[in-house]
Length: 117
Image 1 (cartoon, rainbow, N blue to C red):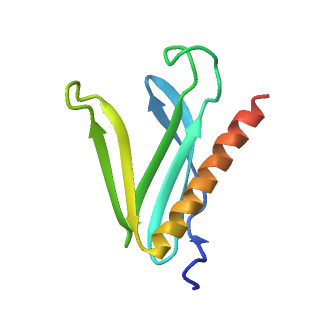
Image 2 (cartoon, helix red, strand yellow):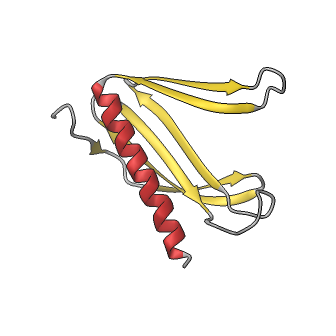
């Protein structure tokens, strides 16, 4: 396997996640190179309004093996509220599988909102 070729080893799996009390239909797939990443994403699309009455979106990225990855939640020093999430990778295979995960995530989210029109 070429270092930059990704192979999907799992079929796409449908799931439901609860986001702020609202069920969100999600899709997950595993992306393999010399490492294995699992990505899951979904949205209920645009609903208008603020977060209380608006859409919900879910994204999850996980290491299933061999991935040089670090996840870090950054919090505001006074409020302890989440300010950012850092994800760092080491390695060429990690870069390739991360790119594939992001491209697939965008495709799923765009497909979902285009089905609503």
